[in-house]
Structures are given as C-alpha cells and as structure tokens.
Image (cartoon, rainbow, N blue to C red; front, side, top):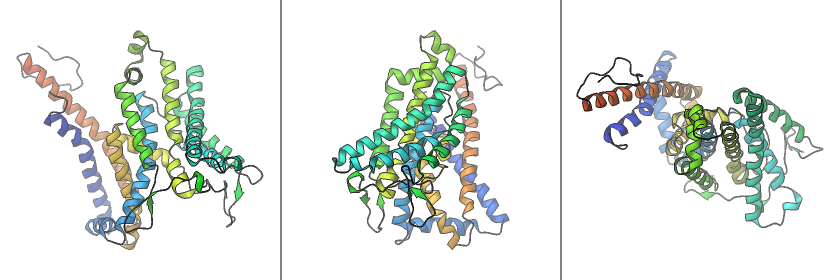
Length: 382
C-alpha cells in the first residue's frame, strides 16, 4: 500500500479522532453524574471562541499558549525519538528563562543593537537548557543512571538554584507587592514586539515564528539527515545501531543536549513578548508535563504536535468560560487527562489493526487469505 493511500490516512486519523470522541463521552458522563449539562458546557466553550467580545482574545491567548506548548513538545519528542524520557523540561526551561532574563536586562546589554540582544538572549537560553540536560546525559553514559530519575531530580535542584539566585542581593529584585522576587525588567531594546490582532488588545507572540522554525528544523534533521536517521535507528535498536558503527553513548548525549536546547526556548516567547521579567509565579512548573502530553497526542510529528498544542491551548483558555456557566472548569483538566490515556490505548489498537491488515495483504500476495491469529506475529505462514 502507498504511504499516503486512503487506508493509511484513515488509520492515521482514527487514533486521535477516536481518542477525542472517547474523551468527550467520558466527560459527558462525568458532567451528567454531577448534575451538569454536557450541551451547556459545550455551548459555553464554543461561545468563548465565537462571541465578538471573547472570541478574538481567546484565540490570541490560545495561540500564545500553543506556542509555548509546541516548543515543550518538540523538546520532549527529541528524546522520545531515542527512547529517552526527558522529564526535566520544567527545570531546563525555567533555569534558562531566569538566566536569559538576567542577561537581557543586564546594564551592559542596554544600548546594544536590538537584534544582537535578542539573539544573545536566545542563544544563552539554549545553552543553559542544553547544559542542564547535559548533566543527565553525563550521568547516563558514565554511570548508567536512568534519565527519568536524573531529570526529575534536576528539576528540584533547578527550582532551589533559581530561588538562591533570585535573592535580592544577587540578581533578583523584590516585587513591589512584596509577594515575589524577580529579575529586572527587560527594556524595549531587548523585547520582541507581538502581532496585533483585530478585536483585542492582546498580541500574538512575535516569537511564534521561532516555534515554526524549530518545528521545521526538527522535521528536517530527523527526516532528511544522516544524524536523524542514526538517532531514530538507535532508538529502535541499540544492537543494530552498534553493528552499523553508531555510538549509542554519543547519540544519547546529542539527543539530550538537543532536547535541552529546545527546552531552553520554551519560556522565550512569553519572556520577550509579554512578561519581560522572570519570576517563578509567571513561569509555571507544569509546562514540561504538558509538552509530554502534546508530544504523545501528536505522535512526535511536527504537524501533529502543532495541532495538539493548539487543541491544548484552546482547552486551557476556554476553561475560564465554564465558571460563568456554572460548570467546574476542572472538567477541562479531566478531559485533557482522558485524552492522553485514550490516545495511548487508541494508537496501540490502531497499530494492531494495521498489522493485521498488512499481514492479510501479504497473505493475499502469497496466495492465501488466512491471517495469523496473533497480530504481533512477525511472519505470515505461506
């Protein structure tokens, strides 16, 4: 069958669409049990997107959230390609955002050309993210420490390190409200102006184009370069990669460094396009885990992750409208969780069905239509 045959396209769409339908049904049951109308809930979410006074702002906020989620998903997906689980995106992006904010607002940076300041800020964020992920890579290749454990521990260390560095006598300043410490504000020369959207005072992050470039680079490197082939081959079979002359340890280091560099960019759209200063309250510690969900839903594909990130952004930003309708907005979190679980199950079911269809096709080509009972069997009896 061709790669883009109608059957392959339908099978590719079956899992995500089925997962979304299943999640909607589960949430409808939960709403019905708790005494809320699923129809009213859906109407409230749709109204937040279509009403003239709410729709444009919801769209802009959703697109901005999707930009952040997409960058986090790419960071996670790079590790997934190598069968590595970078759970440390939270720590990597927060530490990178804090250092980048301190650098961009430094006195010696004021007066430098705007393009140079922004470029140095982005490079610094990537280097910090890569360095923090590199610690996990070093532990894995030298001591065999699981990257899951090391990156989780590094998240906690990053949080404590940020708290230490943000003290008023170092690089932090006390918030006028007295509730938080933050870096100095980045002036206009270090900011990235957003794109105005009609009907709202909000702006689309100017660095939304950076997310597009990161997605294109991710696709090109993994699909059109030898390095990407070796990366995916090592993730599929380390033994086969070694037999082909590929160094598994080197690929582990490269993949985690690239994953960390992408994670370093996660906070840049908000930092340079909206907030202009770093504080732990403005940079939540859940973005990395959202990136995992988006990467799973998008199947590590650059376009799939883009659609999943936009869906996640829409769900997050329509949740506030549920309070007005008298529906707990936590139902959105339940829907997101059900989507992730159902996606995993749906993709496995579709994979098994695809294997059966392929085995049937092979059987027909060999002169028999009998397919093996086990869908995971590697051979088709002649």
